[in-house]
Image 1 (cartoon, rainbow, N blue to C red):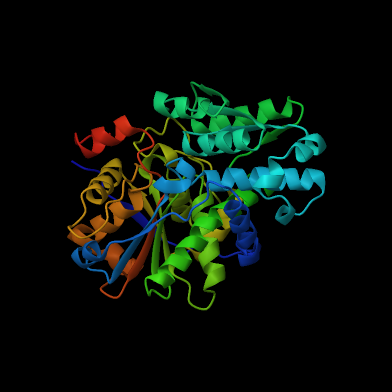
Image 2: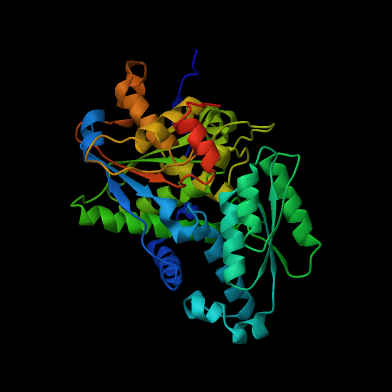
Length: 402
């Protein structure tokens, strides 16, 4: 018997919302300009799934396809690269607008700044992005990966001239290992997309980097004739991406913001558990957190994002593995006339939730709570492609759901 999708409408007490300023539009514009300075930059596609929208019973359905991002098959590089650039800007007393790619990779900057070692923990995509950016910017990277990480994802990071290892501990323990190693290393810097008390500046820069993706999608919606999305379903591990997307659209449409739904893997649903507790305090999930949604297997919330999410999110959803697998298969084999989206396990989870709640009577209450209907214009972010091709084939071709 399949596990059920669980959900909790957000009734948590609000705060003064000061963290929303992290995703101010002017800050996101700086990140966008920085990313555009890379010779590898192109805007990733926004897939318009007209026929799927009709099948599911919504008016419009758009999916931002991050499998094309910088040739890395995932969005994470947006955050890591911008955070590293902001760090270098701060250390050299420059404004980030004065440090485009051409300057960051120059001999003159190397002489002024020297070389730092950027430490991070990852299941794959974030670490690969940090390693890629460090390699391009002539810096060093050290990456710790949790148990259960596949060899393919390790090898992709090693190809970027980084030091990387798979450890016998979970993701959150790897974060602590990265922080401890950085503290003992000259010019060691932690570049982690989760925040905790005393470590908030770099995570805020990472979130701003993710804003590039949101701003692109916002512009592309206009090109399709969509003034604004009515609904956004966004996946969450530590919540940095979810907070960035929620934050951008809350700032972009303050008078009429989209309804946002956060989707987590059921074994790592720290945000959902916080919503259930309903006191406004974050909750932590520990243990192995075995799920096909490896990118969402994070148990300790980003404190910056948590503040944004509890003030603005409509519903928190807890999704079993079969939901992500369903989303992957449907996007891989779309209705004739719609574009195919090659979406990995974490990338497809929100679409799997959308498809399930729109077609299964068991989730009518959830559908009604979110307000999804024939007038809805839904935006999703497929944050990764087939970053582990063998795993992807096993799920999409062979029917694996674990």
